[in-house]
Length: 172
Image (cartoon, rainbow, N blue to C red; front, side, top):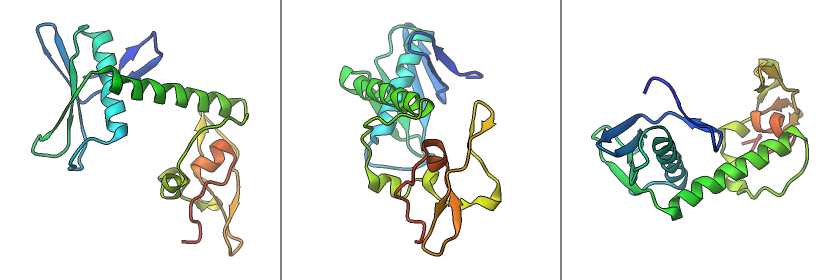
């Protein structure tokens, strides 16, 4: 595909690696480089998003999506089933609620696993002097400063965006 597919009703877009088409079928495909025993939750949600886009933009019949997991073209076919589609829909709703709360600087109860945040690359602190800033609508947002045990100043993308100190280990 040259351009991203757009779902105007649900207001999201995406660009799968390939769309396989034959007759009335459209099968989205995306690739990941990591070999694995089974697809991860976020990969299932992503392929369901691509199934939605394929059914909206090409043909209404999209019975499954394919996740390729290595260079040898092995992978998984994920059925376009309501159980899996719900994962995508729920995550789309959650991210929109989080974005609205961030824009209005309001607190909402967003469940998260602090163990996942601890190693997230968006929570990795860096020195303020490096000048790298998160941007919203092309404008840098203010730095939300963090300090480690030695008093060194730092900040991170997640902390800047949501004005909090993520549970990342700044001293490790």
